[in-house]
Length: 290
Image (cartoon, rainbow, N blue to C red; front, side, top):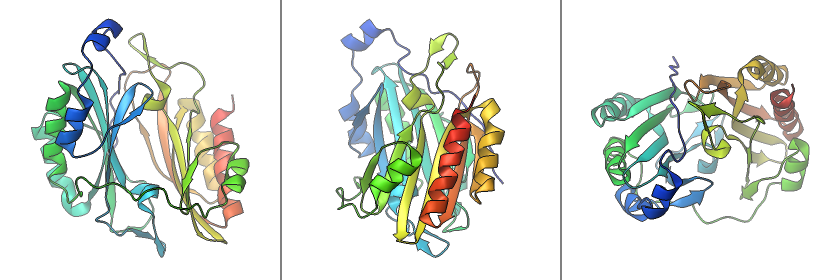
């Protein structure tokens, strides 16, 4: 049973002058979390690959790049930071992790599945927190220790690309990156500004979308994605996926009280490359249609 709640990730709520005078200690946060910071537009990201899990879906060994990297995003200043994370937990870990999130005064903002018939069964949890950056990191660290997530581990360096990125990017009408047999795209499907309490949100942090595709063989792709769309686009996007035999695995809010409302749609696809890409393209077109 999926439970979905939601809260907001607000970007940089401290005045710009304050941020310039007192930059957040991202290296210190990284040492606590045992992960290296990666800068993005308006926030810093830390990744926690679940390389301890050998995930299979429909007989496919799913790449960790496709679905098995938990993350935490920090923004703000050293004394006034915002944390939003996406944790990956097994069924055996779920209760303990949720209890730890509560005891550490963080908030579960969404509980959902992204895959379809995976083994082992995994659940994704969005978490949210506010406070001093290093203290938030310590609280999150105590949560992560309730899982078997390897620490100080990263994904292997970029592997030689053996997926036809030209065909993928052309079919989907967007470009991205690739490593080994996985292609990844980041998109913004909401064209108008989104704000909360009068503050405009940074798109990539608050309502970015992604599509990940893995080439299993020349005749088979698996794919998953998270499409952030306006409320009136939910039904058309889910319908477009269904029409192409792609399963919508979760629909939930990522924010609370934003204007206009934004919803996340997760999907899982498995089939011939042309069919998979045609279905994803149809969903992207439905998301953008007025």
